[in-house]
Image (cartoon, rainbow, N blue to C red; front, side, top):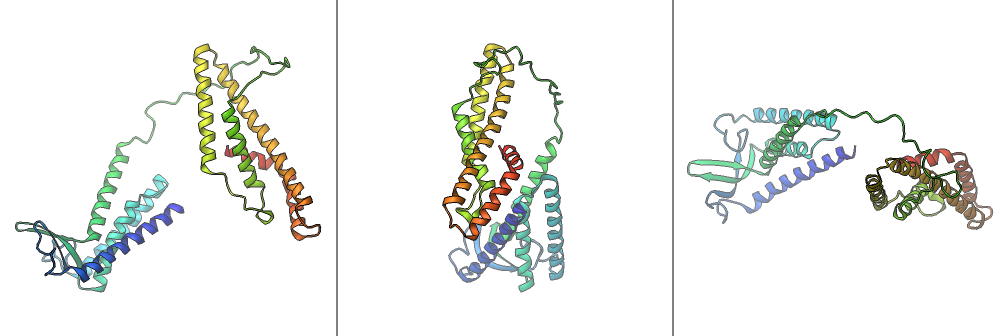
Length: 318
């Protein structure tokens, strides 16, 4: 939906720019202007009743034929955009720009006898008159064709068969136990642990907060997610290098288990901390008999019952 609205804005802005360019051409440019007699290219407004770029005035000058062709082009562009959205998930902005070019000239044909062209290219006896709508349509059409050829050349399936992953993990029973002689001691990266705690805190605040009781609970910033991914990748790279040096692939499996456990502990402890903060705010930060106090008490009770679901959502976002 967001990409669709963005495409509409692109269409409207391109159409507005085309109409403004034609309006300025009518006011500023004329046969007696300094730009009317330039070599190879001149700027002078001319009305053409042909189908495209002033090159078919003597062939087909019927207004309704041109209007019919414009409507057919719009239908084709609309259908092509729908097909691209279905296949790729979003349509290219070139579809909207091409439609804006067609609509720009259709408006001219509906409001006057023909299309206003103000960019005249000429070399000897050869002449070509265009406007901004023609440029938009031509460039966008070439770009759409280029994208189609690129997708056509790109294979839709992998040329290399996928390797089936192992169904069992490496045996960790033989690894050295830690200080309690029961569990394996693992020290995760301090940068990863810090980034994980900050991101967990922001995610839980987003899901546990209530706008009525303070500041609006906003989602964590993109920077927090970026730092978390970078810290995790750096930690995983370090473990992979250690696996290559020691020849023990169990270290990588151990890191995965340790990360999962750290995430579970972090979400659980942070949930307790934020729930305790809400209870403290309900006790000392509000009036004794206010409606907000009752709402917050109900919210705390709901959070206590929905704890497992909230923690699962947060862990899925990490």
